[in-house]
Length: 442
Ligand code: ADP
Ligand code: MG
Image (cartoon, rainbow, N blue to C red; front, side):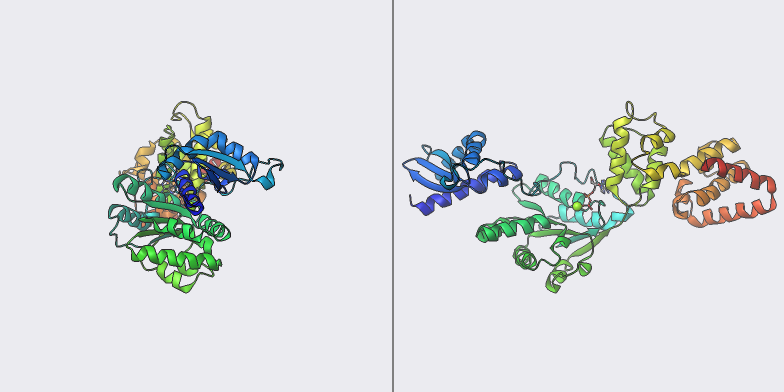
């Protein structure tokens, strides 16, 4: 066999190894090996130094030899890993681990089943579901999802990957961050391997490209991506992109890319509203095997407003300290447990605590106050509760309305105005409401 054939053989062998070895390991230890020479059935492969050769031999020698046999079709081949002679005496610092393994890796929990839909992500969620279900002939190509940090872009994107992997056997996908794409491109250019790089990116039916805003100002990356994009697109392959902002707002993004990005569906994700935050908390708690009380979840949801990752952090905190399934944890205990994670919490008055205080003061069950009855004994405490929520919590009229069996925000407005008016006329009521407010604030 000619030397070039051997080189080619070893490269195929590495490509096969790449799928079987953790990406970071592959990049750190195996990627820089090269065919050195062959002697009969013995193939010598050279590593940058003796230390790395020894490590590769010890950890992956058998695997590499097997792959070499399969790829060459010659079962007698044996592999020898050798260090670069120029580096024999080099001390052996462990090589620096390059990028974290972002490639082709789907987080096992980032599925559609675990994604909580809400009004904040309605379009993005629907778009992603449609791309997944109608994979291969979706109207939404590319699907471009944008939104702030920690709002579920990566989760939703990977959910498409999971779905396609499960339901469309034989289809290939690639999940990659733009940061990683850029890094791969730089490596490929440096290692004169742009051909392999292009082939890697062309051999997919689905490209999930995360955080494209990272390409801002990187001309060479944009150029390369433009071509990869067009090739995939013209071959009818699905592309999903995410960014922290809409295409037009990405600074220094070439006009042609902007218009490509906008040619399918552009969908945003906003910070989740109160109920969605509660639903996400509840979902995360369930996943962790906990059943916290609704008041506890509402308490957390009232302070963390614009980052789902932080919501998760709070659940993790509580899960770590709560007993059993967490169902006996009270809002006050939760406040204590979360005091250093959420300093704002101790100052926060939740709608739940207002409700509890009013219920106690008026001796009416919280469920009646929240409910639909219009008897006077419940009407007054209900309106007082609405008033205090509006005064003391950071809850919007709409959200307050939802606490009361989904009443309209104008009802809340009307009720709070009525209490204000009554307080002007009735010093006893005024005193009572002020005392309640004082107690809640303390
Ligand atoms: P982004 O990529 O937008 O920065 P991620 O997708 O990494 O955000 O989401 C951050 C965390 O919040 C993840 O653990 C994800 O599971 C969770 N998350 C975000 N939105 C939702 C949602 N709607 N339902 C369930 N989990 C969510
Ligand atoms: Mg992300």
